[in-house]
Image (cartoon, rainbow over all chains, first blue to last red; front, side, top):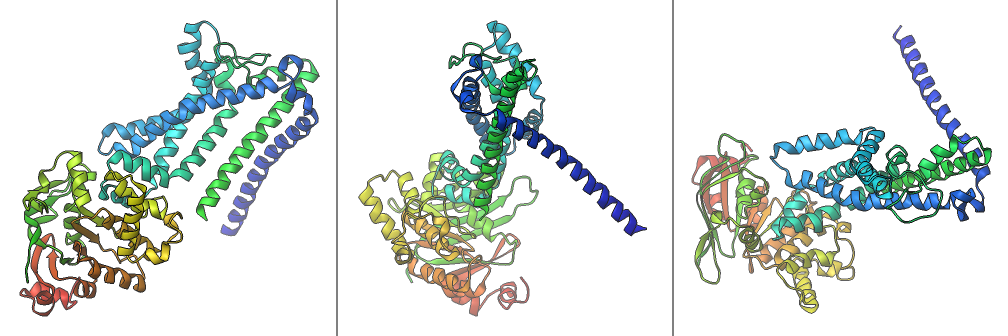
Length: 269
Length: 263
């Protein structure tokens, strides 16, 4: 009897795994076929107004890059505080939990929040709002990574730093962060991969634009929002551009993730 | 024998944060200048706790309580100062430059061999390249590591073997020319050959610096130290010259421990 139950459980879990993978590959294969067939030089050299993706790709990177510039320092400082300065502080655990909850906050909620505090007062959607929404998504991930990676540094190393006569902040910046560098870098890379493919936080913060622009004070082009818009268009050529965009985005996220994993593996060696 | 105290521990008690009872009770112990003092005793007797009080590394964690006095001689004025009265970070930094420490596990910093040694010197404000080069070489020679690393000073220190890393830590500590060097079981993570190298180094170093060494290994204590303090359950049971403690202990408890009846 036990053997039979064992076999049934094995069968069910295998089926579930296969079912999951089938959908994953289905998505990837469809995406690759439709995406590759729509990719040509034209889409890299023209903006959306001329059925190209150039302004969208640049826009997506600009938004993500600014989000990194805002989010990484704030997140890292908060992570350093939690791991290095918060001993015996009863609020530290609360902040840590809150940050974890933030990590799983629905991205549309963050978009709505930024709409309320920035877009609504300013009166129109703009690039800054989009970048800030992405930064808010990124901060809890960076906090968590920094906190965890610094936590892996043995306390003897901190003691050794103090024992040679270094002030605490120097021990943290010269020794502890350097020792945790690879882990933190990997975490930042994965955090970047996480936000670079987000649509919901941008939907009503940065909006969209058909033209090439680097002016963040106005509506700003982004690949993800454009895919969302283009996919619902009746014109097949526009839908094809959306496929190309989706494929490029997926490829990019995949590469960053692989890079992150590769770095971790190298570190373990 | 001409003995001069460089540190003097008087009626010292120590309580860890949140603990009800003190971990060290009423310790009185002199540390003699340019001698090696070994702290021995079974696990949990407080020998590491005592050692870690001598440079106040316990202050990294809040809530620990020191009582009594730990006096450290100012080598210029000859005055004894109570290090437990230090409050400002500056005073503690100075203290740690004067009282260095070696840990159980080697703790190379994540930087080059050269920078590991130069780190403490730079903290003291030494920036001159030629002076740094000279001091780094001197420290590495002092720690019997120069010949092994002189061709790869720019390599990451974490690539050295365990025994080399520990000698690097010793070089790093002696580079800032401390008056006292604390060693917390410095060979317990090392193989016998590396252990021997460290022991030889300890004997050689006492021409320059006073050493306090915590060890689990009684043979090691008898080989390297001039004075031995035997501790048990947070109290100092017996202190004397190493010869006297090992050959002619005054207390039965000490004799039993040294004979290996417990511990």
